[in-house]
Length: 331
Image 1: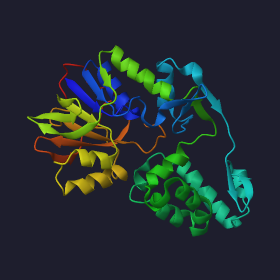
Image 2 (image 1 turned 180 degrees about the horizontal axis):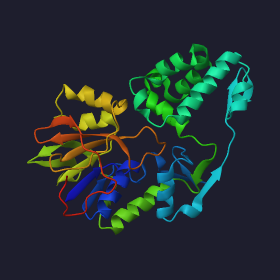
Image 3 (image 1 turned 60 degrees about the horizontal axis):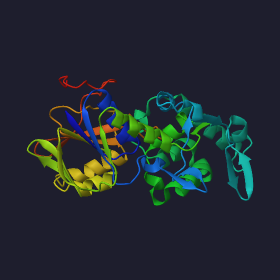
Image 4 (image 1 turned 45 degrees about the horizontal axis):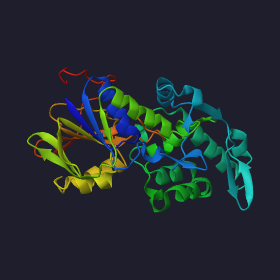
């Protein structure tokens, strides 16, 4: 089986590596000259830096395991930087219960309510109950408008700008639930992890091609087809890890009524977590990253299948922990 993967970021490379380890032929197409997506390194004064800073938590056990499996465990270091809020030219520690209780810009009742809600988010393990809500509406309701506007709204607006009121509550839940006091960093940048992943894909016989701009995605004679500057390539299955808006532009044959639904579904997923695998009936699968992780790797939040004729449907079957080996019949 020949599997194409568009995008050599975290999700694309992890998918390619899993397929290659299962014995399938894999081709990865990446627009940039380097692999790694947002974790790509650049050098400044002889020191490698990330284009966008990343770290991991102690709860990111899959990422920690991957780093060690790739032989980079010796470069993984942990620190515990203080977390603080600065308000009205004053800085206040805000990384434990005592910091919250001493916060002077909320009433005692608001501080207790905020602390109880944060504790609740820590103990809840299933984000499905939060999926009908945005972070703004849920936090205003549960923590109160004063706590939300004082503590969370400025942070969300600073990070997300005009989209602050639209971010899904499961995303916010993950920021609280999965967070640990200790932060992990790979000396030299996380770009090394993805460079090593690309090396592993090549070692297993896969192809990782950079500098490949994809111009069109669709179906041709029952196969997934991709047109790039190198021409048209066809794959038995194609995994797409592009941003939603970009994918919608590259797949113009997607039925118009489904395009808005796909966009909303990937941006603010609803329903139970879905881990679909590539099967015979779905030559093209679009993966959306799991909002739980800062560096989501192998756990797509949900998948969408394209059957022949470009009819879009939600993937229904769970993805097994181990991908099928080459020659195995998809279930």
